[in-house]
Length: 240
Image (cartoon, rainbow, N blue to C red; front, top):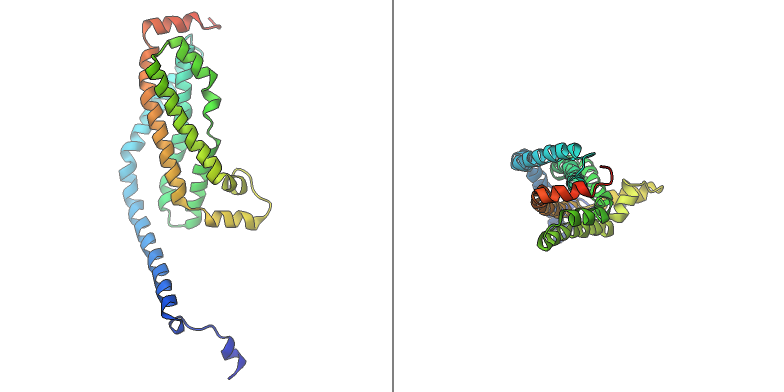
C-alpha cells in the first residue's frame, strides 16, 4: 500500500459512530445558534424599545437637572443628580451595544461589543461620585434612616457587580481591551475563549442595580426638594 494512502485522513463516515454523532451534534448546535441569533436580531429591538425609550427619557431628564443644578446653591441636590447621571451614562453605553453583543452574525463583532460592556462596568466606580459626597448630601437633606439605607444598599449592589467583573474578567480586560497584552496569541486566545452569555449575565445584574438606585433616587429627590431641605442646602453651601 502506498505511503500516501496511509497518511490520508480518514473520511468522516469511516470514523467510529460516537465520533460521527459528536460531529453532527456540534454542527447542528452551531446552526441552531445561528438561526436563534438571526431571529432575535429582528425581535430584540422591538422587545428593548420600551426600555430604551424609558432610559432615554430618564437620561435627558437627569442630564437637564444635573446641568441646572451644577453651579446652584443646592449642593445636596446637585450631588444626587450627578450620581444618577453617572449611572445612566454607563447604562446607556451598554444599551447601545447590547443587541450586537447578543445577535450580530459575526462572532468577532459580538465579542468586541461584549468586551466594551466589560470595560464599561469594570471602569465604573461608585466611590468616585458617592462616598463622602453622598453622605454629606444625605446628612444635609436629613433623609430618613430607611431611605438612607435603601440608597446605600443600591450602591452596594452595584459595587458587588463591579467587583465580580474585576475578579471574573480582569484578565480579559487587561489583555484585550483596557490594555493590550504584547503577546498576540495571549490576546487572541482570551478573545476566543470569552463567553458572551457570561458577560450579558453580569450586565443584567448591573442593570438591576441601576434600576434599584434610580428607584431610590426618585424618593431622594422628593426629600431634597422640600422647603426645609432646600433651606438647609442653601445655608450649608460654602459658595453662597
